[in-house]
Amino acid sequence: MNGPSLTTARSNNFYRIPWKFLSSTKAHATDTLSTSEPSFPHMSATTSSRLLLNFSTVASVSAKNTEGLKLLVTAGPHAQKAVGIWLFVSAAWVFSMVVLGGVTRLTRSGLSMTDWKFAGGLPPLSDDEWLIEFEKYKQSPEYKRINKGMNLDDFKFIYWMEYAHRMWGRALGIMFALPFSYFLRKGYITPQLGLRLSGLFALGAGQGLIGWWMVKSGLEEPISEYAEPRVSPYRLAAHLTSAFVIYSGLFWTALSVVMPEPPAESVAWVQGAARVKRLALPVSVLVGITAISGAFVAGNDAGRAFNTFPKMGDVWIPEDIFMLKPLIRNFFENTSTVQLDHRILATATLFSIGGLWWSTRKIDIHPAIRSLIGSTVGMAALQVTLGISTLLSYVPVSLGSAHQAGALTLLTLMILLNHTLRRPSLHLLKTLPSVAKTA
Ligand code: HEM
Image (tube, rainbow, N blue to C red; front, top):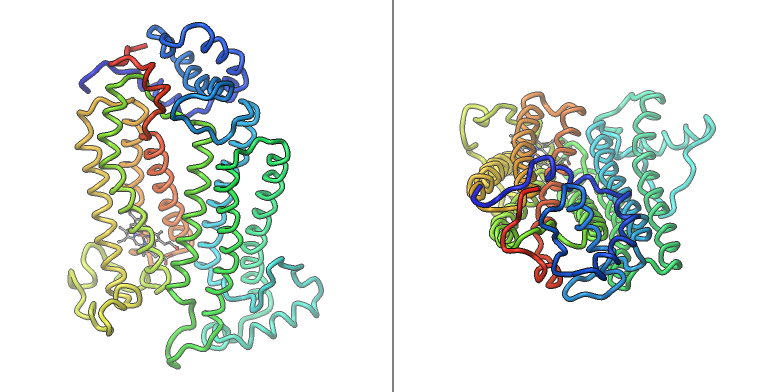
């Protein structure tokens, strides 16, 4: 590293959001403002007081409007903490929804409920009600072609899986809407935040509709009598991508609420962060594209073909990758092409994250950013390992869902990295020394 550095311990601490500091920062922040602004990033500050300063920025600007910094919650540290916790919990809920959705698909439970109501309903409560549901399922192509002869207990298992996934989503809607209206009434939510959260709420409601639109495609008779009934890969990809968008939006917003300023303790580190950002952005886009290509692997059940690595069977590139017409369809519907794409994109992702680490290793940046880049490299390597293991073992539920959770974890790290690389407000910039001092 070129310039003076802080300890790793400090960098790790940065992400341990110090709520206790937040609640005590209001008074402290006022002190910070009223004493001397130029000494804001105190040179001889200890680890915790530096952390405190980061958050005191938050609290102080809530008391006084400052240049360039847009706060999403302006009602003080208590409001910030409450809204922040709510949004992090909501994001974690969406994360769990994605994993539960993956398990539902991997246990082949997703087509067990043959109708859909926006508000949901009770599950079958009596033996008669179960028999009625089972009868409806028996009319579906999945029962006729794959599960013929299934017994009631097995049907109950797949039904409960799908029911849990749907109800977990509805519970999230309530868990999101109630605190939202409470915080609105309390005046904690700025118009900008309100608008953003309303958009995310609408996407969440739309997600239920997309889910049903996807399931419906799997309830239709397949065109060929030999084809397995399964949902449209396009709809599955739309459902998964929309879940990723909602998750990313919630997580980014939660971070913005609790951390309106990025970690910036010197102009040199701000400049370093700007250089890293130029590389991190395209890498993040690549992670997103790889994840979407994974949805097409899942949607085409392409993980159950070519269960070898690095070659696909005996060859590097299967012959039939451009079999479908028009050509473009191969990238979304052809098992060979879809899997080949995913392999290429995943490898490119791994190398580009490794490249990000390599090309930024000499840039003078905040240690928190450096350790985030390191974590991203580790996670990408783990994700590729999980992907290969999933493929080699014919997509068992455990590995398939771990691979899906891994994709979301990698995305989480990319979001955290990009959020941390933001430019600080003018207010903070003006107060920064040119280089950071060690603690
Ligand atoms: C950075 C690397 C990777 C990312 C971000 C990623 C992401 C994803 C995602 C989001 C899915 C969809 C999961 C689902 O809906 O269940 C998926 C599926 C899949 N991926 Fe990856 N993947 C990566 C690397 C790999 C590698 C290297 C392989 C193996 C060569 C692989 C093999 C698979 C398979 C077989 C599936 C289908 C699993 C299923 O049917 O549930 N992935 N991937």
